[in-house]
Amino acid sequence: PPPQTAGGGTSDLRLLLERRAAGGTQLRFVHTSAATKSEMKFSVFLPPGEPPAGGWPSLLFLGGLTCTDENVVYKSGFQAHAARLGLAVVCPDTSPRGSGVPGGDTGDFALGQGASFYLDATEAPWKENYRMESYVRDELLPLAAESFGLDLTRVGITGHSMGGHGALSLFLRNPGVFKSVSALAPICNPTQSPWGKKAFEAYLGSAEAGKAHDATELVATYKGPRVPILIDQGTADDFLATELLPGHFQEGSNNAPD
Image 1: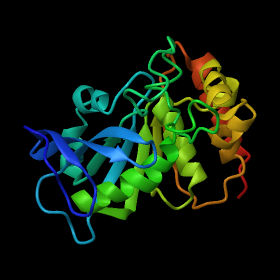
Image 2: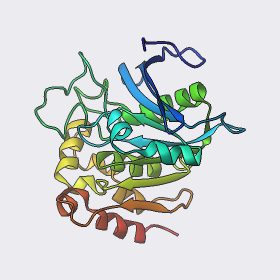
Image 3: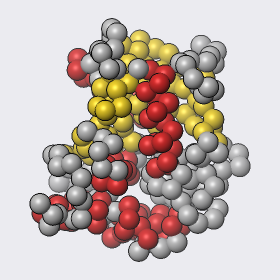
């Protein structure tokens, strides 16, 4: 369908795609983001029927390196499960993109566009646009809640690989914002992985600065609401011992304050 304006408020939310899926509706939108100073695309699945009193419970899914918001939409089949549970699912893009946004030609899949690591960069040339923590937490979630009737008191967060890192770090950095957290093959200790070190050195100036976004470091001092953290990780993963390091996170959680 042609782009349309959707929802209330003053956002320039424009519809790119609308499809029926598992009895619900799969949508894709683009809007101008104040956080990233660029156009941002995202997908949202709405279950069938009317939202319950207070709004839909929802799950935020963060994609991995090289992905967009569309990978999980087309490859996972989550819609049938979300429809059964009455769960809305919001999928942001993995970074800002487009002309004027740095990172499209780094020649490295683990840095730049498609590889934001879901943080707010502090170093040039990234700091003007790569503000993904602010975008997800402060802009996308309120926009989705207003436009699609989501209950902001019942939002979970999950993701895959780099997005799993994002889910863990955003949950731990923002106590009380998310009701649940899980991750699929996440980068658990990025200050100790080549992908993470490279990203933190570029975006934040050093791997040391990246400790403020490293789930293994964060969980060891976390004092927010106590909830189960689910990590699903295959033992035959080629990156298990070099990039993902879930054992480090487990050790850190074992040392977390009671």
